[in-house]
Length: 193
Image (tube, rainbow, N blue to C red; front, side, top):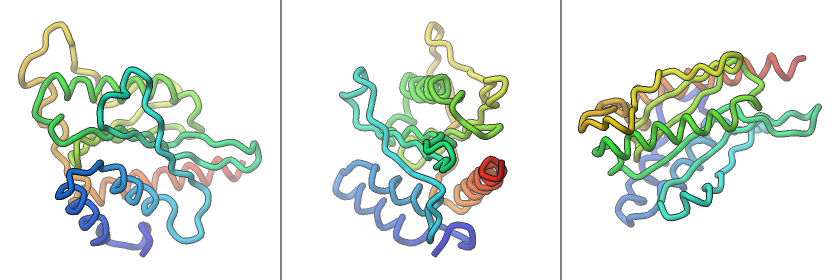
């Protein structure tokens, strides 16, 4: 099984999700497996998937964060090419937590975008398996989608429906495939320099 030739997610991921939910466990295992499957299949050691420690102010919540790094052998360094913020399913039902998830992703870009060696950096905000995809232009710092959140005028429907794609669905597989293909193609250009 390798992501670049498979046509859908392996059953293993669904099993991990089902078991995690039944045991009320963290989704960290699911996403560790998903990102390693997506980027580190076979003998591909060009990428390193790392769980990121939470900032001190976030230590009281159950989410987990990941960074996918391109391994730069010439400079002997790791360069971020994708960031992911994972929170609990329940975050999708509240305008306050949806706004917080959006702000966290934008803060991640603020901290990491300048280190990305690719023209664009992707971010995945996951509320359970509900996915919102972000893309930032490294040269300009512009993040798409544009921020809609204003914490001072929080309405109940703020950002409602923005996490409507299930990453484990067939459409989720295709979107992830497009992101991974982009990262592989642009990383090959960087490695060839």
